[in-house]
Image 1 (cartoon, one colour):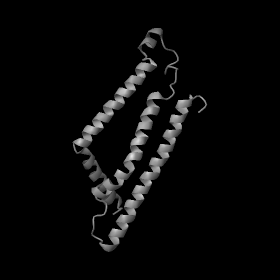
Image 2 (image 1 turned 60 degrees about the vertical axis):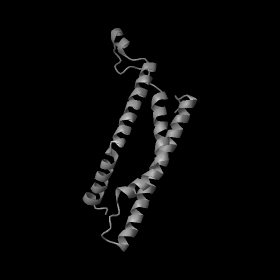
Image 3 (image 1 turned 90 degrees about the vertical axis):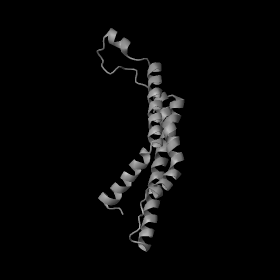
Image 4 (image 1 turned 30 degrees about the vertical axis):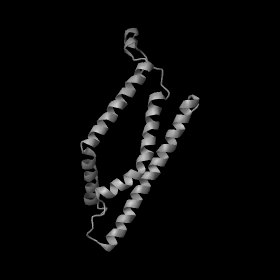
Length: 147
């Protein structure tokens, strides 16, 4: 990280720490869900243990860490270091004019992230999150045999 500026280095360290913390939180939530399901299965073998509600309860605990990680990721992608070299070393003068400036590229990235966030929120409000969650739970419990 010697080529980083001070703020970029701090952003990279924060993103690294939050990535590790998010991985630990997700593993902890999965382990908690599995242990609770195993205990329920011992008392009632026919019980549905990996329900969307149970998964949603665990995901709610991980959500603050995920949101902090997402903010740090967007900051690192928007304001991180840039490679000043073009993709092709033999570019013509006219082709260099078509290359966006770093400032325009930064605004383009911010716009794309904003559009992605809006589309994700619209998908969640439309009920897509529940559909994906139910399919994921069914895949794990039926195909892989966790349940």
